[in-house]
Structure formats: structure tokens, C-alpha cells
Length: 167
Image 1 (tube, rainbow, N blue to C red):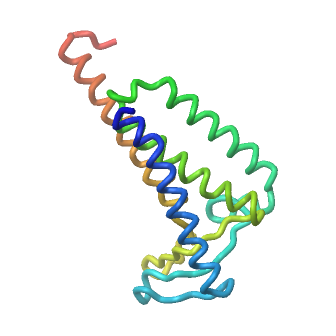
Image 2: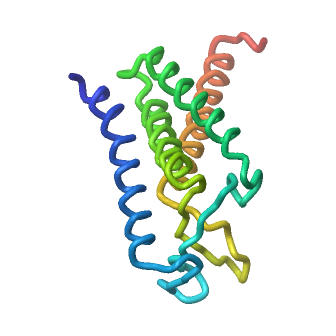
């Protein structure tokens, strides 16, 4: 098995395990709504359950989340099977991180009908959405995908400028 194939398995599995372990630590040691300051006025561990999506939108739409999640998982696996994994490492890492995050939150939705969140940040007095390891993995994946898109566009622009073809 190649190193990249191992990563395709390892990244989502580690993401899911970290996500689920941290959520279990919070649910076993804290009361719902309890908040523990880690860095005052910046970072807290706050036990929260979100029946919606990011920032609490679409509260209670569990069937929609199950359908969208299922489509996302199938879509990511489909794309991964079509990639040249040895030459598109950045994309593979981003997609597998996203896959791990999607599955981590999906496990919560199936078991609890909501998602367990606990990382709570406050920036300049503004309470940012409470999130978890799975959410973090998906955000990192989106940033990596955006960076990959920028790199690809730079390469295309460079090829156009060096080939004299501006169309």
C-alpha cells in the first residue's frame, strides 16, 4: 500500500477518533451549558449541542443533514477514486480531512440528533460560533482547497503568459 493510500485511510480515521474522544471527554465531565475558561476573554471549553448547521442555522433539519452528509461522503469518495493520488497530494489531504470532519459530525447526528460542540472563542468581545474537532478539520480542508485553487490558477496564468496564448 502506497504512502498516499495510507494517508487516505489514516487522516479521516484519526480525525474521527480525535473528534469523538474530545466530544466524549466534554460530555462526561461537563454539564450542558457549562463553560470553563482556558484563556480569559479568548478561549473557553463550553459544552453545547447544536441541532443545526454552522452558526446554528437550519435548526432541527436532521433529515436534510443526513441526506446532505450522505451525498458529501459519496461525493468525496468518488472524487478520491478519480484522483491521481500520488500527484495531487494537497487535494487528497484536503478531501480526506473534510471527509473525517463530515463523518465525525454525522456520527453525532445519528446518535444524538445534534452535534456536540465545545471550542468557544471570543474575539474582541464577539462570541464566535462554538465548534469541535470535526468542524476544525472541515475549515482547514476548505482553506487547503482554496489555496490549491489559487496555486492552480497561478500555474494556468503562468502557462498562458509563457506560451503567448492569452485566450
